[in-house]
Structure formats: C-alpha cells, structure tokens
Length: 431
Image (tube, rainbow, N blue to C red; front, side, top):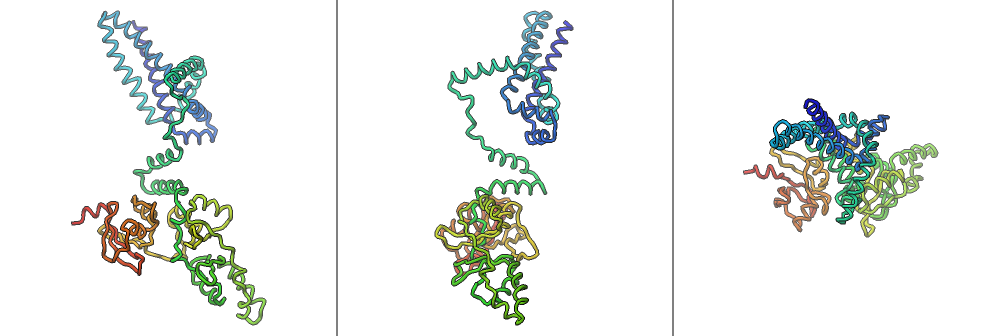
C-alpha cells in the first residue's frame, strides 16, 4: 500500500508539472522570448519553436497529463477499494478530484500565470524532449482529430475571422496603458498614433490656407526679405497674380545665401539685390491631395527628402499646407521651438470648462484630454459644430452634442472663433 500511495503522489506531481507547463508555455511573452532568442538564449529559442508548433505541444502535454491523471485515479480506486470495499469508489472519486483540482491544476497553473516567462524557460527542455519522444503518439491522435473534424465538415486549417495583427497590437497597447501614468501613458498614446497614421488624412492635420503665411513673388525684393525675416517659418510659399497660384517655395536659408552673394558682386550696394530673381531661388512646389493618408505622406517626405508640401482638393484648389513636422506631431504631440508662435488654443478654467479656439483640431483635443469626439466628418471643433448643427450659429447659442455642451463665444463673419466646452462630468455637476 505504501508503494501505491507513493506512486499516486509521484503521478500527482507529474500532473502538476504538465498543467503548469501548459499554462507557462502558452502565456509566456512572445516579444520577450523573441528578444531573448536574438540575444542568444537557447531556451527562449526552444519556447518559440514549440509555440510555432502548438498542435504538437498541446497534444504532448494533454497526452502526458491525462495519462498520469487516469493512472493516479485508477491506483487510488484500487487502493481504497482494498481498504473500504465498494465505498472505496466514492472515496477515490472525491479524494482524487480534490487532490487533482487543488494540487495538480489550480496551484501549478496559478504559479505559472504569475511567473509565466520564468516557468516557461524552466520547463521547456523537458517538454521539448517529451514532444520528440511522443511524436508518433501525438501525430496519431492529431490524425484522428483531423478525420473527426473533416467528418463534421470543420476546416481545421481555417483562420480566425477576427484575427488581425493590427487589432491585436491595439488591444495590447490599450491593455498595458489603460491605467498607466506618466511616461508609460505617453508611450501608449504615441504607439496608438503610429497605428492611426494610415487612417488619418492630410486634410485633417494641414494648416488651412487662411492660416498660411505666403509671399507675393511680385513684391520688391527688400519687402520679401523683410517678410521672410519677420516670419517664424523657414519655408514660405510664393504666389503670383493671385494667392491660389503657388509658383514656388522659398527657403529662408537659400534667400539669405543669395543676399550675401549679390551685394558682393555689385559695388552699388542695395542695387545688387534688384538683380536677384526670387523665382530662381525658390524650390518647385509639391502638391498632394487632401485625402492622402499620413503614412503615405510620411513615406513620400522621406523618399523625396522634402519637408513641405501644398495640399489641394479634388478640383485642384489650394486648401493649405502640410509639413513633416505636422506628421511627426501626430505621433509625438506638439513640437515647439524658439520660433513657434504661441497661440493659446485651449484654456482650461477652474470649473472644468474649456475655452477653445475654433481652429483647434478634434484629434488634438481627444489626444490631450482623452475624449472620444468623432473626427470623421470634421477636422476642427468649429467644423464639428457646423456639421452637427447644420447651421452657422450665433454668438451665445448653446448646443449639446455627444454629451458635451458647446457655447459659441465669438464669431467673425461666418467663422466660429471661440467656443466654451463643458465636458459631461462638469455638465452634470452644474446646478
């Protein structure tokens, strides 16, 4: 009897090993194992190989686990029937259920979940050897399973319709950053922005033509130089005859280089500047459709080694400009330098309300304040109000969209300049 009890104990330990190994090897971090394999860890490489052939792995573990569980139950039944007769069947069933459930299932699997990576690296050598030894038996069982699946007209090789690497990546990012703070939260926002590049169009982030600082190519050269020096931008569009007729892009460095050269060639001083052909200095303008995805635009910027492009609509009319900095800001947030114009686009008041300029983009508000305002039909907050209200609102009018309250504070002609936004929480708290 002592030998049978010892055998049952050994079988329970083996069952716990198989149960914990299954959990550890299937829940171990794939990115971590991939990185460890690249660093030369042979056990991590073994984990990756087993995971790539999951049918053999699961088949081996289930075969071993069921074998030791059934054998342990049979021995326990035989032992207890010898001791208690027919009542031993009931005692064996109850006792083995308790022992297997606690010590061979819950306990090892809980440990494996909490220490999946360490446990996977610890058991992989033994499991890999068992996979090799039990390959004929596992292959036979897999063949039988395949026959049964075909008998019931189930395609064993069909892929999951819901499987999507992008969706999985988004889910992983959300999972790890939902309650994150500080740098981890910022990293999550940046990663989500990278995934959104193919869904966001150039027209949603461009600087509208109303806010573009452009130079008339027909102006005197002294006036052009002054405009360039007073501008906070290094590149300015050049137009001729009419503002929509963009004939070039003037780079401040190219202009200053020519200014330095011309007076040296002409002792008459400023008269040398009059010979400067501004169009010969300007680069050729590059026009892109407003429906271009940001990912394509970023790749185009890299391929052409340019930082500046003009945005046009389907009729070829100028809509605005987009720069490499605009695209990068969609990923990392606002990039400010010493030449940026400080524009207070969003003011948060102590009562929780916000005063927002009409040209602030919905994407910026959503990203900075973790809101979920829709940006499919409008790029700016003023555009959202116009789209939802189907009218040009008057100053003082209030609208309620998506749980937010929008109050028009200032309007210039037909353009909404400032809005007071009350988020849902503050709106409910208001008397």
